Length: 355
Image (cartoon, rainbow, N blue to C red; front, side):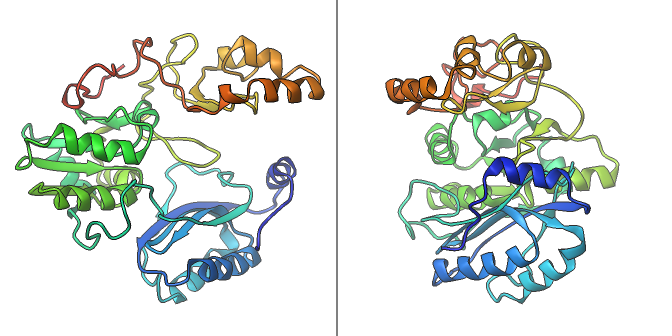
């Protein structure tokens, strides 16, 4: 298997001293790939030569890629990408806020699906999707009171940024979110529905599955939040997306309108920076302000900040002892926080909160 086995800390140090700039980009395509393993190996070989980094998933149903490409190799990368019959003309989305440090190595994995939906392959027709809306069309339609705007992302994504008046499912995964939407709006299948997600890939599946389940008027934001933010800025309009767009790379977020609508999970102060607990055996994803990062040494708790100072052998023994403790969810979620969406509300009540 072609892969990069260099220690991640070494790779992260290397990228700090690169003498060239990088562009962060993403793309996806639902397309039949007959031999995902062979296709994966071809891409890894070609893109390694171009010094590309990123996280790419390949399955029989298509490809989902988030990448960091050297600016001096961007032309060659695009030429190769569009030379592939499966990917000719695939739309590319470029990061809104980009320091080039989004990825530090190239990882290409073969998966059963590029977006896990918990549904049997081929159980619904992915060629039948909702109406693709431009940024301006979505902007205007989302302001109409009869329109139902639904966020198809996970709760930790919508917590730091979302469209005004959007319904945000209290879901840990896309699999959970899509089922919650189907169940909650079972009796509203004639209502006009607008879906959105980060780059559009989840909405392709969500709109298709909603149509499969009898929803009559389903549309989706083409290009997702990334495309919306760029187009609305060019048009000189005030963004209806407030806060920060969560991204699945080293940055973990890019601001859209400068507002901070979420809060530190430790002290409750305004904050929108996601971090992973510095105790690698915990690695909890949570929001932390600068003061708490200093107080808890970038950990989620006093317990974890104590653990990171233990001798390595003591940590290994603790890892064995507490193995079951770390088998559960590694995403912060609490009913007790007044700043999070209340789990006891139904989806339609879980409207976006400003502050």
